[in-house]
Length: 409
Ligand SMILES: Cc1cc2nc3c(=O)[nH]c(=O)nc-3n(C[C@H](O)[C@H](O)[C@H](O)COP(=O)(O)OP(=O)(O)OC[C@H]3O[C@@H](n4cnc5c(N)ncnc54)[C@H](O)[C@@H]3O)c2cc1C
Ligand code: SF4
Image (cartoon, rainbow, N blue to C red; front, top):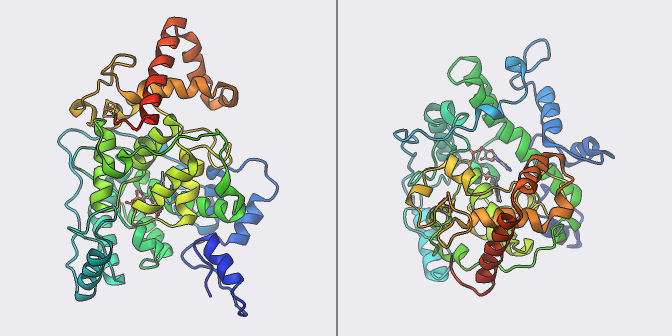
């Protein structure tokens, strides 16, 4: 049988008492063994090193002399533009419901109608042909702007220039080798800029393969890590979207409606809030695994526990992705619609992300202040007048107490 996508399931198979022949999972470029060889006895793993090796081995976006296209490995700096007001993502691809899909929708409605999420407007590919047409739609209308607006978020724009293919890819309706070859060709034919092609290929042969490698390298102990000692329960509004924080309500609302949020929404809105609020890793991991259509343990766990919660002590990523409301303001238009004021930090109407951000840095000073990537942030914090730091701490304490009391924010 093919290697499983979850450690627990694979253990059940190993222990089932039947003689099994295991086959590598062709949904990935890098085998588990190759990843373990690459990791070797390195004390620190970094996605960028792994990714460069993958580019060289696959020849994707490489020049004949063995150097990367455009003479740089990574164009991440060109992938952080905020969305101009009048620009919209392409009209999304649609898929008519076939008889089997309708039958399954009715079955789910009958048996699980009280579960999270919505069955209305189900619009995902369920066959290889449909998945291909979703992919072609992205190549034609999304990829060229993917690079520039990869990190952008906007009201009423759940997909922007993202491909939406993760669920189809994870269940094997698409072939990752073909996707990468198509993107490479689109760049070589001059149909898309390099920052788009490189940005997209980095997600597929970089992040996707890297998080999977880490999962199989570190399971099962990885799932139990809690490097920052977080114990707080997940706030109820993760399940209901009932919060005045406009960014959170938007991301959670679209998650309930579509089972989808793009990477920056998951990382810098719902993930960032969980990190700043000190949510217990098992609670937030369970949420991400339950609510997204593309969720599998091998990809959800390292992304949530490692990338979002920094619970592995920096094994997967070199620093926690913590940010104040200013980041969300810069990358989205949510703040102008919000009850909270993003330019306030300690007042009653202040954006909760702001004081929680500084509270997070203060309460984990011992663990995080030696991290060279956080040095400028701690310099900023140390430069604040003592009364300002006290006020931020007090406001953070109040917000956390409100969460503990089960209040909505
Ligand atoms: C907390 C958290 C939990 C996540 N859980 C999942 C999950 O359960 N399943 C899942 O497939 N992805 C997960 N991701 C990664 C990423 O958010 C989704 O793959 C992406 O949003 C899917 O949308 P898309 O197909 O439009 O992606 P695009 O933005 O178009 O990106 C293209 C593809 O790159 C791959 N990719 C991009 N980023 C990552 C990443 N960090 N890790 C792995 N693959 C990546 C995906 O296959 C994706 O389809 C998670 C990210 C975070 C921060
Ligand atoms: S003000 Fe704060 S809570 Fe409101 S949308 Fe902006 S970042 Fe989110």
